[in-house]
Length: 319
Image 1 (tube, one colour):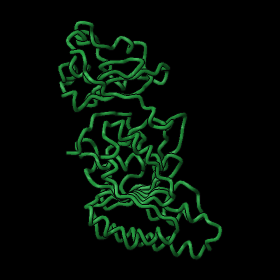
Image 2 (cartoon, helix red, strand yellow; image 1 turned 180 degrees about the vertical axis):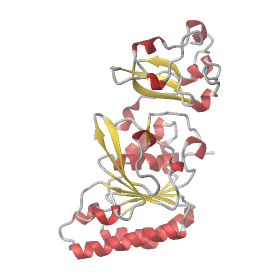
Image 3 (tube, rainbow, N blue to C red; image 1 turned 180 degrees about the horizontal axis):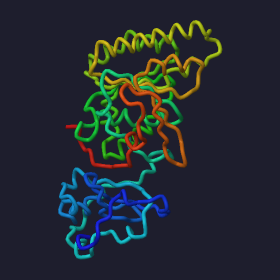
Image 4 (tube, one colour; image 1 turned 45 degrees about the horizontal axis):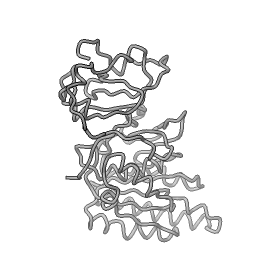
C-alpha cells in the first residue's frame, strides 16, 4: 500500500458503478483498503501500525468504513502480502453484518453533540422514527464516541417504539442491549391526555431525577387522528403540550429535545411552526434523503452535514 498511489474518497465519480466496502482515514479521506465483504478492522489497524500512511493520524480514532461506488483503480488498494503476514492470527472480528438494521437504509447520524442544547428539533418523514430510535441509543454513548453521555428520556407518543431495533443498534456497536436499555427512561402514552400530562407535569421531574440532557418524544400527534376528538379540543391539548416543551427550553437550557411526526394529521403545523430545527427524512433509492426545512442559524444545510456513512466501532463500556 505504501508503495502505491494513494486514492481518496473525493476521487469517486458518479460514473462509478461498482459498490465495495471502502476503509478510509476520516482525517484525510485516504482509502486504505477496498473489498467485497466486511473484514476485521483490527487486522487493518495492525497492518498499518495504527498510523494512516497519508496523514499519520492514529487509525484507532480515525478509521471508518462505508459501502460506496468505486473506480477500477481502487480495486488495487489493499495491504501487500508482506504487510498482511505481520498481522497476528486470531484477532477478533470488529465488523458485523448490518442485517440487524431490519431492512432500513444503512446510515449513521452525525454526532448529536453538534445539536445545540436548549432547542426543540422536529423530524418528519418515513424514517423519522428509525432515526429517533438510533439517536436514543447514540445519545447515551460517551462524548468521545459522538454521544451525549447521558440518560435518555423517551416518551412514546404513538406506541411505536421498537426495542428490537434499539437492541440491533446496540449490538452493531458491541454494546450489550440490556446495558443500553438501562440508560433509557421510557414511558408510553395511550391517550392524548396522558401525553399532555407527561410533558407538562412529569417531564421536568424525570429530567432532574436522572440528570438527562436528551429527551425524545416519538410520533407526538399520532393519537390526534382519532375522529372522536374534536378539533377544538385537540388544539387545546396540543397547545398545552407545546407549553410544556417551552418550559423545558426555558428552564433547562442544557437539554436537547427531539420530537417526531410520522402520521399525517391536520395539526402538524402546530408543532412544526414552533420547532427550532425542522428536518424531513424520507426514502430515496435505498438511501435516506434529508431535507432541512427550518434552522435557527442556517438558511440551508447540505445533505453531507446531516448523514454520514456507516461507522461501526467497539463500545464495550460507557466509562
